[in-house]
Image 1 (cartoon, rainbow, N blue to C red):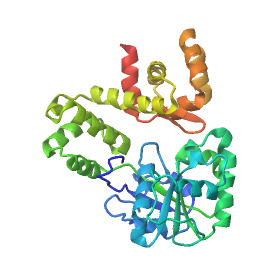
Image 2: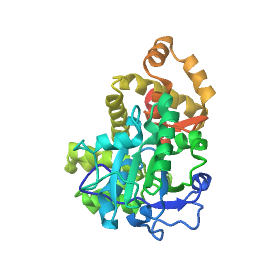
Image 3: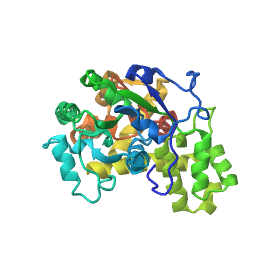
Image 4: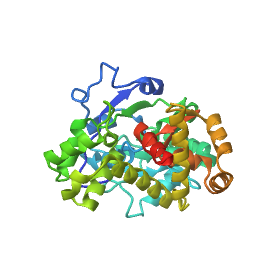
Length: 347
C-alpha cells in the first residue's frame, strides 16, 4: 500500500508452478489459511527466482518496495527496477544508470555484482509496451544468465503472465500468489489510520452485500477509502453511502490512469463502461468474451463509438480502467462495480 508509514504484509502462498498458483483458491485450498499461513520477508530470498503474480491493485509494487527496503535485514543488497523502462539499454547498463538516480529505491551501498547477496526486483512486467515486451523479456533472460547468482523477483498481473508464460518456460521460477486482505487486515489498516471501531463497523455494514468479499479487501480500494474519509472528514462517516464510495473508487481509478497515460478521456471511458455494465446486467453475466465486446462496440451510438475507438486504444480500455483482462474475456474489477454502473446507466 502507498502509505509509506503503514505496511500490512498481504497473505502470500508459494507454488512450484504458475498453473498450480493459478488454480489455487483460498475458499477450497484447504492447506491455506490467512491466520495459519505464515511467511516472512526472508522467505522471498531463499530461492533465486520468484514471480509475484496477483490481481491489479493487490499491492505488488509496494511489496517489491518493502523487499528492497528490508533486504539489508537478511544480509542482502537490493534495487527496484521499473520493467517498462528497460528499452534501449541492456539490463545491467540500465541498472548502472539507475544507481545515479537518487529517487530509485535501493539498499545503501548497492553495487551490481554477480553475487548471491544481490537482489533485483523487476516491477510491473505487465506495464511493458506490447511491441517492446518480447525484447524486454529476452534482455531480462540474458541478464539472469550472465548474473546467475543474483536473486531475481519479478511482479506481473495474472492475465498478462498467462498470455506470455511460454517466454519463461526455460527458466526455473517459483510463484508467489498474493491473496486479498482478510477483514482482520482491513480492520487493522483502518485502525492504523485513526478510524474508531464504531466507524469501522459502520463502514463494513455499508459495504457488506450478500456474503461477498468487501471491495476494500483489495488494498488499492482500501487505500482510496482512507483518502475519501480524510477528504470528507471522519465525522461524516455515518453519512457515507455505498454509492458515494463506488463513485469515488471508480472515478479515482480512471483519473489516476488518465493522468499516467495523459489521455484526458476518463469521462468518455466512464460513459462507455456504464453502457457495457448495463448490457452485462441485462444478459446476467459477469464475463464477456472479447468478440462479444466487439459486438457491443458495433452497437454503440456512432458518436460515442468513434470517439472511444479513435482516442482510446483497446489495451487501455482493457487494462487501465476498472475492467480485468482475462485474455479471452473481460470482467469488472468487482461485481458490485458492474451493478453500480449499470444502475447509473438505467436511470
